[in-house]
View 1 (cartoon, rainbow, N blue to C red):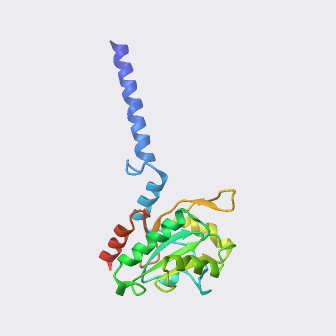
View 2: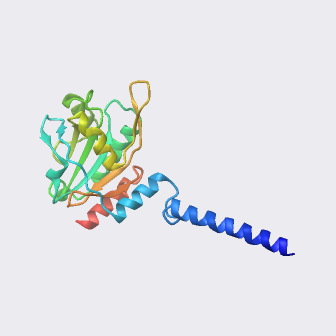
View 3: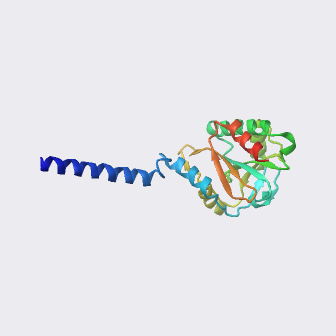
Length: 204
């Protein structure tokens, strides 16, 4: 009997240890994937972003910091992508159409950023933008101008980009929201653009 009780106690301790490890590793059971943990972390502690020179579809230079005081919705794309980036473009178009017209540009701006600056010149950015109705004012399409700025900016947003060996890239996709202070404050799924827009509208 004593041996049986000892075995039960040992089993219980192992189970408790496992629960403790799982609790710690999943951010208190709220994060079952690295992506969920990343989003929860950003909600708790909005993230400062590095300075990076950007160039839009009209060849104009600017930075994320230029938008402090306004909300900024950001997505990452490359213009030759015919799959997930098209979904991102359609999601952003729904966000723009859902937001109050008077708030666009004044209170909130949309920005699609290409991480493939070597091939996404302003002409390519403009063509991509025209496919979704990006006007260059309320919704800008831009590239990261300096190759040295690409990795730090992607890392700050938590965007992972991997060459697919066929001239394209595999990358995670989300809609990111920068607060009026310029920090990354929220990350949302691309299949919930209307909910994302409604949350912005409520905060205006």
